[in-house]
Picture 1 (cartoon, rainbow, N blue to C red):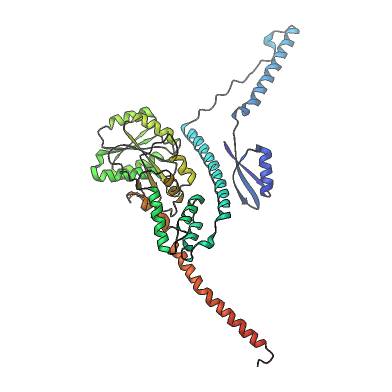
Picture 2 (spheres, rainbow, N blue to C red; picture 1 turned 90 degrees about the horizontal axis):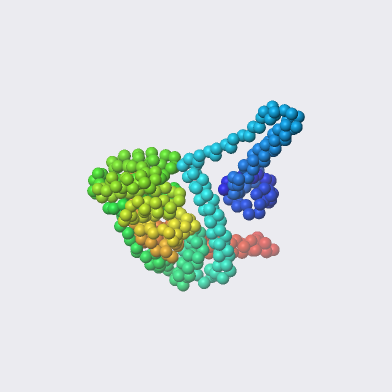
Length: 427
């Protein structure tokens, strides 16, 4: 699948052009304005067989022409060798696809699939929001908790979760009480399923590309090295073909002082695990593409393997659901990254309410020097509620309520003065 760029005067012409070029099933990825024109990015399927068809037709025509000339030469009494030589081009060997190209292709397909799933999820959220808006009534909400309801509406909370939360606090009349009830309800739904931070054994750290797996591995290795010594910890980078990935993990491990090794396939990984059998803790950093397949490869090489999933706090509901609801995945714990950047991890909270999973560690800083901390469901919910900015909305609403009567009294006084001044006996 490839991404194609189309330019037109407006979105309607761009859509018609895309459908005319690539068919009615073309996938629209994005649209924007560029230099007064509408730019549309679409994803289309690549047909490699169609590219080789013209060459085969040309070779067949060349062979037929040469054969006819040979027959004419025989009829004229000439030797076949005097006829024009038949030159058929040898088939060109297909270029060998390198590991980097293979990874880029797989990553591109995953991105297109992710965009398609995100668009489907957006359509479902939009339809659900329309249905909820038809029967939801804000007039029944008490004035005191309307700042909380407004904050929930402004945040990026999935519609189904937001509706349940609003219904849970709708009959309350105290803002702090509603906030505490909201937090207690979410913590109870997630559950306090705690998991130990990796300290011994063989652990594989997996997750989507850009989730912060390598930094999490480095933080875990540093914490273990400080407790048990650098000689008891080892890090293995498994089948990661990203540009600069090996250099990054080498640099991080050099700062910590632990051994770092590289395995390109399952056979090499088995050899390394056998050599590192005396180490107390072995951390395996897996690539961000074909996550489940790579975890299965690692599991085939290591007995008693423990798998941990790393997701960013701002991950979308589609991404979270993809990894937590996969029937082939068996995660021992969930690690959350970028807790310092995201203040609204609501999609993650929603999926954890439906599919509880033990939480183990979280990173609150982009610096490797800041260690990972133990994460609980209460901390995750508290971070999300703080990100709502309820206090600011409450202050703004109270100021508006205080200013509204003063404005109405002033307006009435001004109107009375104007009427008096217009009276004929006013002097």
